[in-house]
Amino acid sequence: MTKAAFDTLLDAVKTLHQAHPALSDFAPWPADLEWADLAARDFPVSDLIQDWTCADFGPEADIHRALQGAAPGAHWLRTYSEAEVGAHFLANYGYIELYGPTGQYRSGQGRGFLAYWGGGLEYDWHVHEAEELYFVLSGSGLFMSEGAETALLKRGATRMHASMQPHALHLPEGPILTYIPWRGNGLDGPPKMGKS
Ligand code: ZN
Image 1 (cartoon, helix red, strand yellow):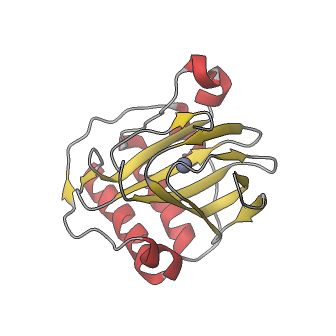
Image 2 (image 1 turned 30 degrees about the vertical axis):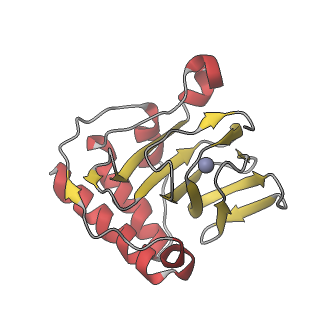
Image 3 (image 1 turned 60 degrees about the horizontal axis):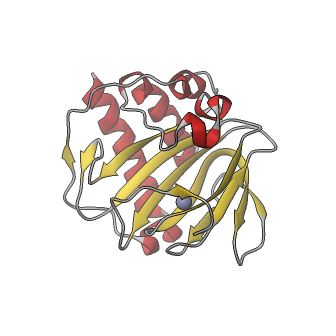
């Protein structure tokens, strides 16, 4: 059951990735995906996503709903510790590595995350070596990137980050669900808080 739910999710993300120029220009869809048996890990984010009704149509909504189906069996992740971001942040955020070096589907060619942040959170400045594209699937967020205009982005909008370009994300209007492919050096590295 878990794999069937994830195959539906993977297909939905692949459809959007290959159809949207911002995504397909950023990185080709990986051709080496292999299912990995990861243990389900239940963080509060799983229920928050399952309870977030998404009535709209379109490829983004297909991903939103497919993630709700896969959420109970997903290997949810959180990068940061309570000391770094606090208990409230940890209870309202989480992500999965859909594909990548340690993902639900293993790939050495690319890495892609599906990530959620709850309304009111302020994800502080952070950096990572890999280049990154945020694609907003549901909700909205205030995107801050050093050297670029701050912008409130909604479904279908994108924001790219260069290697080690500091960025932050605030959620003044409610939650956000994003698809985040990475590319380049540092593909298997974590982000870290701070501006360098
Ligand atoms: Zn980032």
